[in-house]
Amino acid sequence: MAIPSPSSSSKFSLLLMILFISTLSSANLVLKVSESTINAICTKTLNPSFSKPNATNSSDQIHSLIQHTDNPQLKERYTSCSKNYDNAIGDFKQAKKRLIKGNKNGLKDAAATAMGEFNACGENFRQAPVDPSTLQKSNENLLDFCSIILVMTKYLP
Image (cartoon, rainbow, N blue to C red):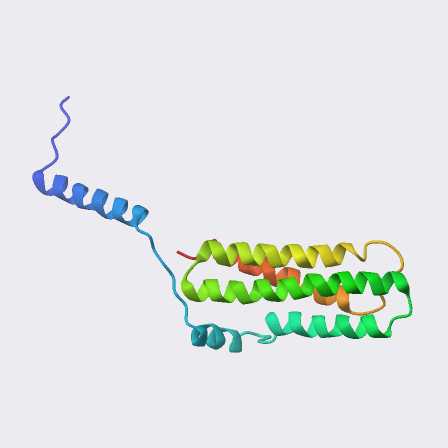
């Protein structure tokens, strides 16, 4: 049994489809987002102050805890976390700049670095004495936020 030869129009269609697919797969798609777009998106979320302001608020909380704790071990841990949070806030600023420039990999790297800072802070409180503040919950929220960013970068072009 002979296999029918494709017509010239189907060959042309196939060629166009191959060219289209190869163009899409090799295209350097860039997503550029303006700061106003970021603000518009954030203001429409359930908790617009969840991200960077949350990190800033937590950092302020840590500074207050350093000043008001009498426990030298907790004071040392809070001081360590303060450094982590300062670094993470800088990472968030870099993430925002990279998102605006359309640098998906840079955004992912900055979010991962911030996540590392929050993880390092959280590790400080895995042993006694117990931290009586809400810092651990704030830290977990920020880890969740970084995780969301990391997942979102997988869907960016």
